[in-house]
Length: 286
Image (tube, rainbow, N blue to C red):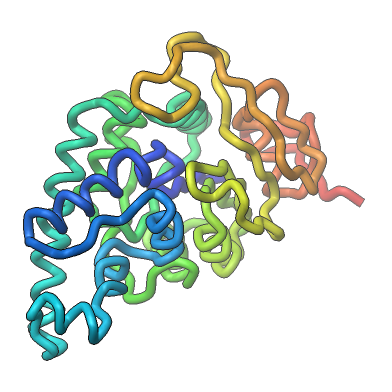
């Protein structure tokens, strides 16, 4: 039976720009740290997997000297843990406020996958409370209970290491050949490919220019046919249907006008249109 695994940030909702960045900056302000990341600076920070790891990138000798922070590794780790715990509180409050809309197509495809009997999971190295908050927003109350969640420090290495996907596949006893991952970043794609999983990419706020060579499908969003979905990812965005723009389609799946579950099923066999969402009848392309 095929299975569908989503990344969280940038896939379920465009949370980096409108959730994580302001949460980081509010945390820095509350702790009296002399740093506020600009949008351009954060575009570089998102290449670092994990929130605590992004915070640790600040800890240069000059920064420690300017802030009076301890140089002892254990003491610094404890301080970063305090920052990150507060940042997670701020972030989950932002998500709970409902100002960040889910990305188009996530709930639709998750519902279709569940109806077809596909196991559903979220695999992310973000903090688990943050992931669960975004999942509740994106999946809705009817679907959220059908997702397995693997998040936070459940694995030692963050993306692009494949650990989180290897962990998820092992714990759910999935066949890697029957798993589709939906990612939004090169690091996430590399993690999925490193675990020998098929990967579809939906680019997000900071990832549109990244190299996605190796992905089975690259689109700007999964798309949605129904009015009422805010398509630009920004708070207060216009309500309208969202068509998928295909950026790379090496297998010739040709999703149109939006990505369907059958398109994701086709990725498992390297096949084109006409394959079924149940996973039967798929053949390799010559």
